[in-house]
Amino acid sequence: MAKSNTTLIILLGALTAVGPFSIDMYLPGMDSIANYFETPIENAQLTLASFIFGISFGQLFYGPIIDRFGRKTPLIVGMVLYIVSSLACAFSPSIWALVFFRFLQSLGACAGMVIPRAVIRDAFPPHEGAKVFSQIILVMGVAPIIAPSIGALLLDYMDWKWIFHALAAISVVTLITTIVSFQDRKGPDQSISLKIIPVLKEYAEVFSNHHFRAYALTSGFAAAVMFAYIGGSPYVFKVLHGLDNKEYGILFSFNAGGLILSSQLNRLLLKKYEAASIVKFVCLSYFPVSFCLVLFSILGFGFIPMLVLIFLLVSAFGLIVPNSSALAMAPFSKNAGSASALMGALQLGFGSISTAAVSILHDGSELPMLIVMSVGGLSAMFCLLLSGRKIRHLKELN
Image (cartoon, rainbow, N blue to C red; front, side):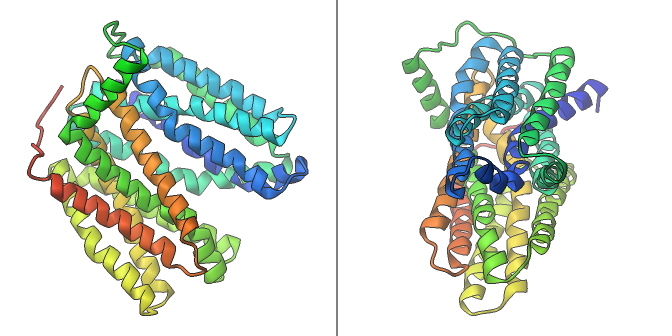
């Protein structure tokens, strides 16, 4: 791989890390934030809810903008917004100010989630793009392993405000690197309208593309599996099965390791198989795994079989999302930004719904988490199977 491409992939990985790090790195400071502002913990948790809401739907704001003005300028503006709002979080005078600044921070973080997908579409054909997505998705596996540890380490020596100072400092380095080394391969397109009606029509046009819809929804349901696990695992593992914080952290890291390994296995598989074939095979495997996950729990098979099946479902994310992302983006060139934004919004939107479903269905058992994970996996399978006849396997699109 050319040195310029290696530098680009490293930069895109750093940009993609902004969102996950902004969530995972500050979680250890949640209690400290509540104590500092002398507010109930549920108010402090709203700072997380506002960030997730903003990063879920704020991506739609960036789509037409990066198609109109190119990739680099909106990326720089988004990162500046992120840095300023991160510092504002650290100096928040109240918990409600922190909730607001976390929302602004999420809007800045969206740039690092939407633009890398569009840049990969600009720079690589679909098959190579799937390999690049596999490298980028490493971040999603590494972030939950190291980010909470960094946050906890900062809290051992400083107060919670330094978590946001650290996030701002990391982003300053990334911003400087972007300004110096990032080359916009697309550039501005004045024909793209930013008026609300044309923008909505643009998103409707993107979603009407059957190829995009099939793979974007498949990756969205895969994200629902992951978010159901993230949302439900603390209660299932710690409360129901008695794991302490250290044991839970090790188990969470182990599953994240499965995600990392599968994403890198995907790069090897792509040397022999098409991305579409890999997605189809993994989605078909969702059926037996999802069925056994719920059945084993009902029959009382115990903790270890459940862990093995959860590991398989979480690891599948590293095989489905890189390939689905590349395939969903393949039909688009002019409006790749809108396609990237819509796909990201679908993934996080489905993830938010699955997290809420686990909470709403809570009955004191592990079944709500397992059922929602299984429904997400089976939905991904059926979505792809029902779309199979209409999907044409795209070859090398530029």
